[in-house]
Image 1 (cartoon, rainbow, N blue to C red):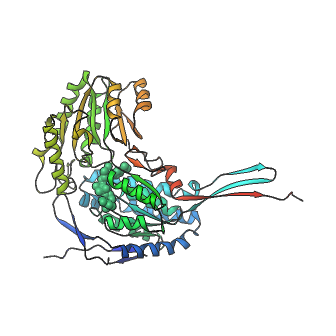
Image 2: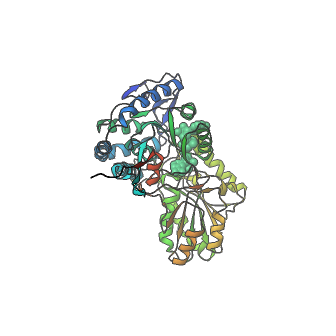
Length: 486
Ligand code: NAD
């Protein structure tokens, strides 16, 4: 029997065994094979990481901003060089297909590219004259040790929303990746070190809620970036704020796509199939509900049904596979329970993914319910799996009223060629990221990832100029100059 590798934490530039006795198995969800074991680290492990990160901050914050940025340029080159390797690791531990994994790596690289712009992004502002001989200048500074807590569904992209910008702004960073997808993080930190990052600036502590609570409580941790489910995000936000930290918490979603009668239905179907079933529906920007105008509902649904049954389910490393597994057996069971619940509450199951769920991995085939209403659990809850609900509506107004009843407000999409409808949608929909004639309106690195309502807690979002604000603080200097004698 071959021994299963146990991951080590990365603290102060060294791989250090955790002091814990408690390890969790990490599976390949497409094969159920054990990939490694991840330590559920202790508060003492975290204490050591915070101490080292706080020491490293004293020197890292003094490194000139363009020199810090140059390390990010090196890092970007290394990430490009290792793109395939990183993508394969994502597929191995997360299950999404290799094309999607390559897309995720590309998204992560774009975050590094954006963060390499800190010499411009960190600039302050000034006013040469606010009173006679008096001027004001505003300078940005890093804030100290920053903690990142990330989910399983984007092992590369989501951490890259955080640490490249935090570090480029002069902070030091401790990442606690998801205990279900910890493997990729090893390569992220190794390549950053190879790019020239000094020891102690980027640290990894593996674990679960004990580490999260430790981060919340530790006075040396000045800010927390969280991405994950709504209940945990709300907890991290409220507890982190109580401990007087800056917190940004990006949380759950239930994204609606609206299809109007004038839309190009083939195009809408292609986009919605990809948005609902891509990455096994495990995307915070996944399409979970389609509201379609009654006038074209039957035609649209027939096309959707046909396209969904063509989807190839399997191991994401295999050619032609579109739909990989969900992350764990518990997620598969939870999804099957939701399918039962949808049936019990009276929705019509028109594509049953349970019939397309090979049992060599945690698979759930594409699933579609028609006749869904807003009092049903499958409409309300974030299922986070390849399950799509359809609601038939009489017009755009009803579609928007329906979507706006959700407690979540991450993304929303509209399929139409009608400019007035697009404007009406933009003005009235409750969601922070909108798509017009496309399925996954995830903003690029230089725009904020701007969920609303229960999809986000905090003020400053991840990415874009918000991220520079979040990871810096200001000194505003008001200076009076004596009358010039020259
Ligand atoms: P999760 O909430 O289970 O885990 C996220 C992180 O929190 C992990 O690092 C985990 O170890 C930690 N955690 C889990 N339970 C905890 C607890 N009780 N106390 C303290 N820490 C805890 O989320 P997940 O299942 O890994 O990811 C899926 C969720 O993430 C979905 O809800 C999805 O919508 C959301 N998500 C949101 C965005 C966004 O931008 N809004 C992006 C990606 C994922």
